[in-house]
Amino acid sequence: MKKKLKGVCFGEILFDVFLEHKKIGGAPLNVASRLNSLGAEVAIVSAIGSDANGEELMQYLNGVGINTDAIQVKENYPTGIVNVILNEKGNASYDISYPSAWDKIELTDLNTSIVAQSDFFVYGSLSSRDAISNATLKELLKVAKYKIFDVNLRIPHYTKTNVFDLLLAADFIKFNDDELYEICQGQNSNLKSLEQNIKFIAEKTNTDTVCVTLGAHGAVLYYNKTFYRNSGFKVNVVDTVGSGDSFLASLIINLLSGKDPQYAINFASAIGAIVAQNEGANPVISPTEIDEFLTGF
Image (cartoon, rainbow, N blue to C red; front, side, top):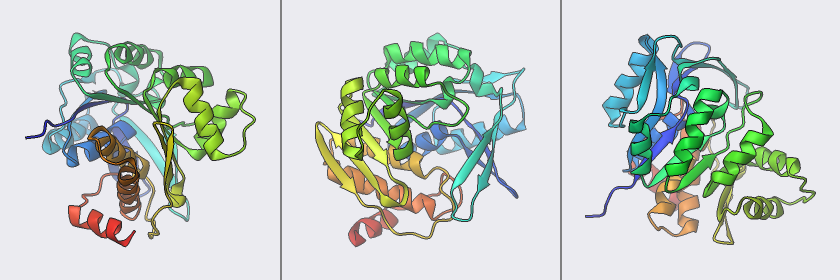
């Protein structure tokens, strides 16, 4: 029997608050949920408040079988919330509360051990906006076997210097196209094309796996010095919250399982499109639904 991949997601777990309802979210939680649904063994390193929202998050995570041993409870900080504003096309903007419990993740022997024993470690830029979680992240990166950076820039919650430090630590980087151009320009790239800038950042960071998502236009994967592309799937977008997170989780599972990179990016693009045509970040997706998307492609 094939061994399950073991992964850890680090950072924010929270509630996305819409006009009339709230949904469990946070990029690390969304990635972990999709990884779990695709068969990985996943733990989350994070923190919640000692409050009703925190209890609800723990119930959800325990209910779906995600390891919550390294989620800390903070008496003096609330469970995170994000106010989500959707435009007429379903694209989201975010107002992220600070400070939240996940800003104060402390380094422990337990979370260090969980990361060291896992096959891969997923982290983003938002979780390093506070000095405490940032210091913990930097230490965990030292023991992680394979490091996946989901850049996920959220103004004003990052500095270019810190983001570049996180890029240098990564073995696998995922951007959207705006983030790629912003970071390349910050590193004095005067290159114009997407492919040139992907190669630029791969060389600058000594990273052999770089993926750039292009919204409705699909994604580009640079893997072992070869480009792979998916031009996207046409869907009726309900909201884009969590679409990129499910895309990343699907790409991780397929690439680290040794699947063909073209199949991996096609599969990930299908998952991302299916999420976008549903409400919320973590809809249940059946294997049949995925097969239908890929067959149509």
